[in-house]
Every structure is written in structure tokens, then in C-alpha cells.
Length: 105
Image (cartoon, rainbow, N blue to C red):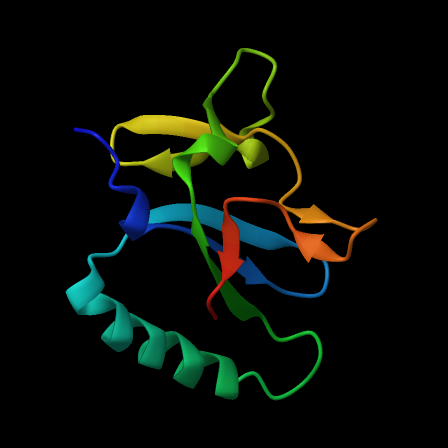
């Protein structure tokens, strides 16, 4: 089905030398519970190299369908579909996230 934009999230589990990324649809009525779980997990990250989780509310317009040349680590699975980001989500020149991206955790 169609992705509901207000429920689409990009999640990064980031450690010192690597990260795992993914997409999730989280209905509004479940987001506060999800947020509390993630914030509690992040509090357990005791030192710099322990992974922490970042969550971004995103607009589906920053995604594209996967192409042949995409490397496996760029592929974001959402159910049976596969997507990739169109580009970086952060603009270092303006020191802001791009349009369609809001860091929520």
C-alpha cells in the first residue's frame, strides 16, 4: 500500500565504526511508547563506542527505488519493498537536516 508520510521513520543504530539503518512505519498512537523504549536504550549507552539509536521522521520524497548499482548497505527494507535515500539527509553547509527530515530522537 501507499506509505503514510506522517508515519514514516528512518532509524540509525550508530556505533564507533559502523551503523545499521532502516525504515519503519510507526502509527501515531504507538510513537510515544516507541520513543520511550529508544530513549531508555540510549541511556544504557555508557561510553562513546556503544551504539545509540537516532530516529528521523521523513517524507517519502527523500527516498527512491533501489537501482542495480546500489551497494547492499545503502538498501533500506520496508516490508517487501526496497528503497535508498536520494542523497545525504544532512546539509553540512547550512548545518541543518534537508527538507523532509526531522530528527525526533
